[in-house]
Figure 1 (cartoon, rainbow over the protein chains, first blue to last red):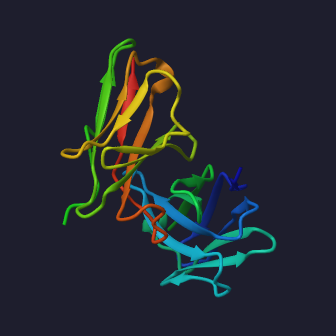
Figure 2 (cartoon, rainbow over the protein chains, first blue to last red):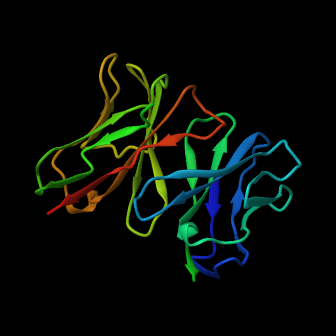
Length: 114
Length: 115
């Protein structure tokens, strides 16, 4: 069975600085997709960024980028120029290429200091 | 173009009562997924439905929980004879196709409190 591990329960960053959130996963599949979701206090789950496993190029979305290391099964999220609105829970998620359900890590709570 | 709509936003039930949670997927989406989030935890998959069909219910507890997605109307997650351990946030997500690799759209969740 696939698992997703986020080893940092909490992280803190100064406004305008850069922070990296860690995520590792375990799978025997070769076809899969990885996601980062943001959950602010409103509880809404917001898709931040996604990565196809077959793509070597790391995904980027404005200030958000990933470092995808397929051999190491690592999928970290880098947030550049952190803003107060980035404060939230961040969840790493895995989607099998053959199944429909997402598998989530336990999350990392990010605080942004002004 | 409304997103995934879940209601109620908050639901309080006494032990032994029934809880009914509703989810209307995004327009054009025919695949619905239910997840449960316990305090300080990530979301855990419960069930995946298509219109009138249960595709995968491997995450559903064997007793008291059921889900449906009728031809007309929202998807319903039903919990009978609720217990305190059922207190959690329940999220619904929808997608246009099964295994939507673009990422699913989530609703805002229903927070169930059992007293």
